[in-house]
Amino acid sequence: MNKTFRHAGLALALACLAACGGGGGGGTAGTTATTPGTTAGGSSTSTGTPLSGVAATGKALANAQISLRDAAGVIRRTTSDSHGAFSLDMAGLQAPMVLEAQSGGTTLYAPVFAGDSHVNVNQLTNAQLRQWLRSRCADDTCRAQAATQQLYDFLAAGKGELSALTADSFDSDLLALTSTAGGSAGKLRTDNTFAANGKGWDALLDAHPYGAITVDANGITSQAGLLQAAVSSVALAAAPALPAYPYDKLCRGTLNATVYRTANVDMYGQDISADQQRRAALLADYYLRMERSRFEVLTDTGLTGQRAQYCVDGSVVNAGGSASGGAVGANLGYFSGPQAAGEDDWRQVLHHETIHMAVNAASGNTEAGGPRMVEKWLDEGLAVHFAGQDGRLSDVDGWFADSDHSVHPMEVGLDGLIGKQRFGDLGYYEMFRLMLKQLEAANAGPQELGRRVASVLRLVKGKPIASNPGVFQTAASQYLFGYTPYATYRSNLPATLRDYVASHTVGLGLSGGTVLRGTLLAEGAAVSCSSLRKGEDVQLVGGKLLLPTVNGSYRLLVMQSVSKAGSQATVSYYPLQTVSISNGAANPATLALAGQTVASLSCSN
Image 1 (cartoon, rainbow, N blue to C red):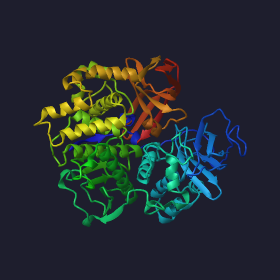
Image 2: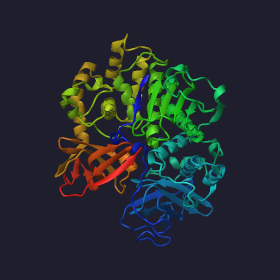
Image 3: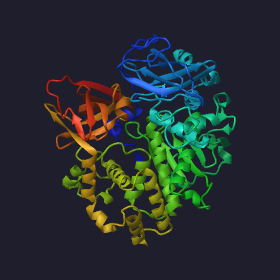
Image 4: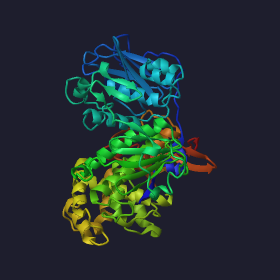
């Protein structure tokens, strides 16, 4: 069984943020504001925080009324041009927001999150947003209104709210939807190359016109049929029984009476709502298809179409409300915590375990308790990397300088630590994902890395490491290390990782204050439990904060301390400071913290 995985990052460091909501910002609910520099029928000329985008249904929505409603009910308006393009000022608005495009009898919506600078609005963003709101309704009246009513009215009446919706979860759902509908990889909502020209994403909109898309109990349906994976419900008694192992210790209570079934997944549930269990089945089906394809499992006719069993347990969460999961063989998966954990958290754990299942399938480790075909560093590295859990770089020098943890990166265990502020079970997460980031950079990006990993898995299939110790090492040398002998690569790895971190980070100096770590937030993001959890975690290394070399302007929260009392964690931090990163340098190069008033934020499970 692959080791239970806990979501890491600042959320776990604070031991509470996975379950917290967020807010911040200003504005008066229910008011309407005209964007500075905007006139009726004109475009924004404000020098504030701009939001651009394209409104289209296949054809451009020319001269459409574009409105942006923030979390406090403040609305700003402009008009699209002849190509459906528009620009609005977001300065002072509170995320999450809802974008509306109205032209004649057509009204479309898309969500806007802190950090967004370009958002497209079309029939697919509209349908996905309505479906998300519908899934959180408690009765049929609410569900019908979420599917058809003007969403500004729906939200103003208090029948729905978006505080639990995140960019990652929405874009993940939208990608699953567009993948099934024939879209390309990428993010339709935020693609700033999108144009109403009949090509790319626009061809997908042409194939699924606005008037033909409906949102109802079946999901999102086009004239061509259901766009999502088809889901049916099966009585628990009629579904295959969950095997005793590992479910003698997981999902052990009373299972929900209904099992949700797709072509690839049976989703069992415990202490979870029917809507959430059904959504989990849709998402698991998408992840399973994507990862089987990435590692070329679908080329093996013996595995094509084989349905996997998952169980989602809403009653179990880790300390701080974080999700966990496990994978056994090729077709058994488990994850917990979707009711308490953050939306992105449990989705990433589900994706993580599905990657393990696909790796097991591709390498021939298909049975519970079966032998391992690949070394742990690759198995776990692939799971954290392709599940999107590798948002920051590790302090590699700190790792090797710590005499208590003088272990080679390929042999990091669950009791490993990086520096003195790490939890004991996060060592493999930190190091293995860093190794995969470096391997991806050395192997021409994620798509090529996936192909090369698939070649490794083909070579080791059915050849356990225990009885064929050289097979995996030869395959890794050939396909991942550029024919560098395994022993040589292993010997050079510490220096390779140090060089990689050095080339992908910039140190920001600090003076006049006590610092624990930091968080890099998108420009304009407010300080809240949810924004801290979503922000890029920044580590303290050699007296400097280690920032990723991602060009742009960010808000840096410098954390002074974290204290815990029961279910509450209090973060003390210095005022947010704007930091610009460009060409491997930070501006300012040093933050002067002396004399600054420390603020605090309390988060609970």
